[in-house]
Image 1 (cartoon, rainbow, N blue to C red):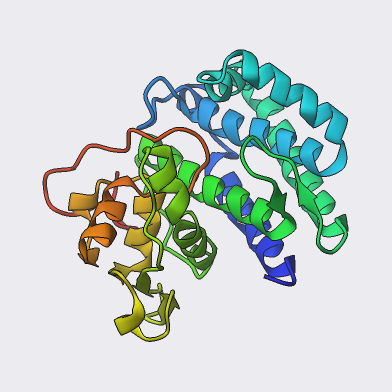
Image 2: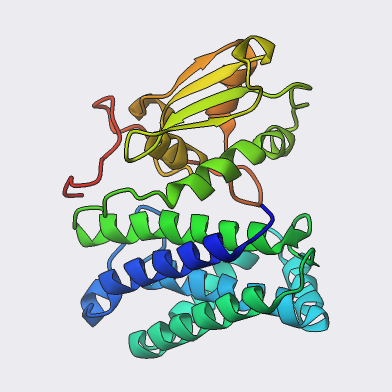
Length: 276
């Protein structure tokens, strides 16, 4: 992606949409449990705020970010939860203000980044577009958790899912790697139906040249790679053993393999418009 402006704009819109959901919450609602074990609504927003803060450091202050990485290395399995726990202790009004300020600071920093810049991260270095895409993916996914906790309809999917779908495809090899498996040498063909009925395609133009194929709704694919729904509840289809295995382990987020969500038992994931 040569010009990151579009994904930065979409990141801001995704944050603003979630902001509308939490702006007027009561103290009791901030304390509601979400589908993530031990995490309340406050933890979800705290995690986003903490990660935005780390992202700003990565983009603007390499030395400060390196110190954050050193802290993470002292508790590699817990530093994400620790960050959410620390920020969630703030009063809701302060947490909300800090999250808003961090979102704006990150968008400004990404827009000011020079062409071709790459930033350090807890995993491989990231480009401006990759950083914005990762933040959009997390904002969308944690926003689903917040909606579930509040028992409100999830917001209808938008074309912003395109960024998450692309990230999910690009992280295929990473997903195999964190499970200790060698990724397939060749690409899969991925064909997804977007929110407006348009077709989003990735991989070899000729499906005959692909070692596997994945098809289905873009929303379902995004739910899968963010591990917000179990595969058995999604209308995704895999052709080929490697592609089938990928759908069992796919994750678009950094870190160790996620535990994912248990199946709902009715053969489908909650859809936008359902009351959670």
